[in-house]
Length: 156
Image 1 (spheres, rainbow, N blue to C red):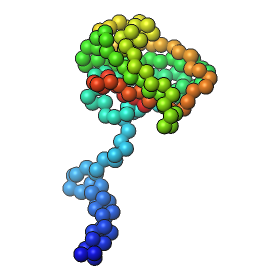
Image 2: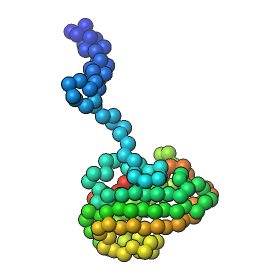
Image 3: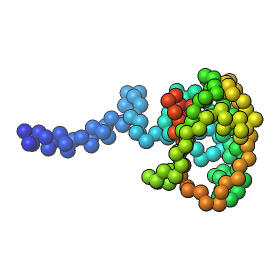
Image 4: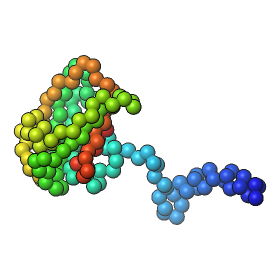
């Protein structure tokens, strides 16, 4: 019994290796760490596959790319809302530096959109916006946005 267990354990790496071979038209197993880059000139990635997100991003272009601390950042974004986003919709924003949570805010999405862009709620269909923001000189290098119950979008 011990010999069988040892043999099984020693052959496990071969099983994983063999499963990744594209034999007979089969695709190799995908990595658990697949990335989902956001379209456009930016360093953004979705935190999960965006296929079920309410907002399908056409592109996000950042100038400069990547954003630089102390500089003006121009954001040009274009997307398609597959469902209307009405007043009262909430967004949960987290900014982390490693494991340390620097910002943890829940806000009214429409309120924020209407105060900071020329868009109005309900948000639906094809939308574009251009916005310039000043990046503070002291910025943590890692941030993450997590959405609410239905995923609007979730970029890193």
